[in-house]
Length: 280
Ligand SMILES: Nc1ncnc2c1ncn2[C@@H]1O[C@H](COP(=O)(O)OP(=O)(O)O)[C@@H](O)[C@H]1O
Ligand SMILES: [Mg+2]
Image (cartoon, rainbow, N blue to C red):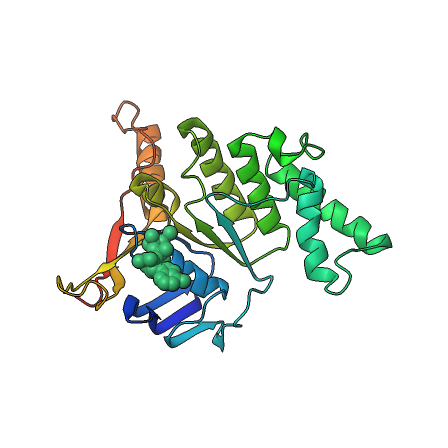
């Protein structure tokens, strides 16, 4: 697989404070990359760079080999932990709004056949995230889980290739979070997305991601905390396919030799390979 997104020697500095330093990353098309790290390590800053909201202070970011557009374009969508949906618009209205902004740059409204197409697209996406029966509700009438489904629909209705998730399920109850995990896994596969997800939940990082990155400082100056930035200190590729194939092969052996005692426990997070440990 080719690297869709590449960061080369990327730095983020705010005044004297170095937040990220020497970040080198290649992210393949179709990867689901979890990003973990201590609070303040620069995880959200990294997402803002990929979104095009902020530019790196040094280094280059390319998408398909071309410099990343220094603004947010429809090829990238984002979902935050708490998404500010418009309270005066219904679920359907909120979802269409994104398309209107994108397609009707001057008037902000779509008319006729284009509006009809936008409504259909929004309805399809809302059904896909499980909000088919909630299209006419207002955000205040919805639970946190439903609002996050709306946020995901808003991000995906523009058909981005890259979906950026910043602790998207952190504020949800555990049961709802599990539902959202299945939803995002299904959408990732069906829409062939490349996902970058920041999470503080290490289990979530490993169970959803095909790759887990840890951002942290690899050097610290106790007298000047802002002197060194965080970088990628661990980069783990999780090969679930190998784990699954091994289990299927084992199950076939089991069929030919009944009672061979093959475990049918859930797919383990195994087949982990440490690709590289950067910059230590
Ligand atoms: N616009 C900004 N101006 C100054 N400092 C900032 C700005 N944005 C983020 N920071 C600082 O950068 C560091 C990393 O922030 P952030 O990327 O939000 O970390 P994380 O998401 O890992 O918790 C923090 O110390 C934060 O205070
Ligand atoms: Mg953050």
